[in-house]
Length: 147
Length: 147
DNA sequence: GTTATCTGTAACAGATATTGTTACGGATAA
DNA sequence: TTATCCGTAACAATATCTGTTACAGATAAC
Image 1: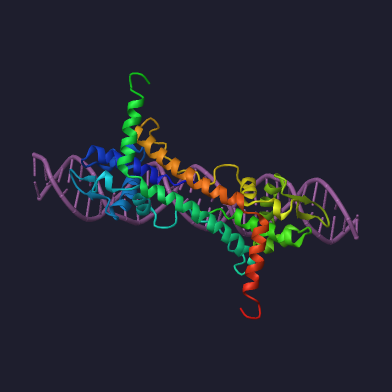
Image 2: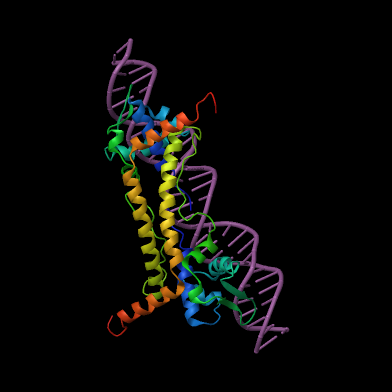
């Protein structure tokens, strides 16, 4: 299964934006993410539609985090990127009326629901501020002069 | 993200095979799964390599469940199909030395590990027998004459 | 008002993974 | 010897994210 790296990238860049405070162009952000400005505009566009960042065109324009780092959770970003289930159960639909298929699907459905609940709780409990603080501590652990 | 339907399909068909008791051809199994015999041979081949089913070629050949329904868990099937992580965290690798990227990845890694642990526990606690019993009860709930 | 910046989007190729098909070689029992 | 069946290669179809190029529209500087 291929992983979707947008959530990790958005967490990364939003924390940078929150720490820097000002407006950043998609060009600069694309350098932070080692990718293309269009990819940045495409993905940040979803966050703008959910009121997490704002964009401004023209000279001096760019992207800015609207809410405080304390007010944004990992779950907020996840929901902005994808409204559906995070861990959809991989069910089969070969013979929907077959009791065995239904029982198999039911088992998978319940297990995935429990896993998703665990994931959602942690996503909801983690703010961008906490990530920023982890990063600052990490930075202190490995001073440039010593590492 | 596209889902991988092999686990659900294998649970479905293994329960049928366990209840029927005998040997089934990939042609018949493909009808249970509403698909192609080659898909069946491909997927059941992975289970054979893990000692869950056996295959025999030639006339009268086919596939047979080697272990009892009580002895096979959902986790056994999952592991036979895919040895890797079930819920790999979608991390970014844009700037591996950036503390912010590392902190973001760390948060995602821990959350997914917790979710996967929950999922594994349920997979390990569910046997094919339990699925078979659920199917039988389900069948009783909706008698053909009434449904 | 012209120009240099920036965003918004369409369009298309590339990578990856499962699924569906066809084709054919090899093995086994009647 | 023949009718079955598995094993596997090969290829197209599908789906999703990603990377790129191209261009239209908006905005501030001059």
